[in-house]
Amino acid sequence: MNILIVPNSFKECAYSPEIARQIVTSLKNYLPHKILKNVRFSVLPISDGGDGFIEVIKIGRASCRERV
Image 1 (cartoon, rainbow, N blue to C red):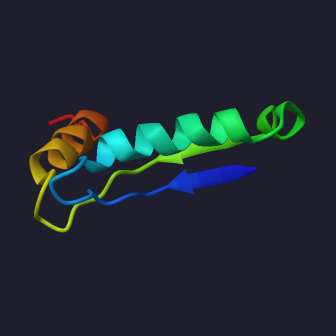
Image 2: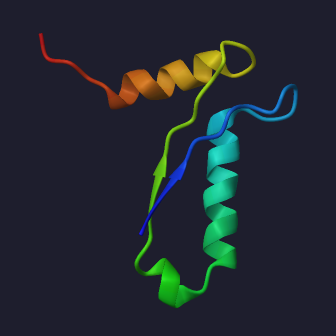
């Protein structure tokens, strides 16, 4: 099973990468082991251009390297 985590930031509270980590941690603590062993989490923090935009761009640049 694949679970896609795609959070936006919570204004003046937390940036989307931090929220994504918290969601994954919570799911790992909540879901039974027999389900977790078949789960793959994919995390894709997003931004609408407001709070946390730079953090999301940094993550995107790190994961998308292009050879020239």
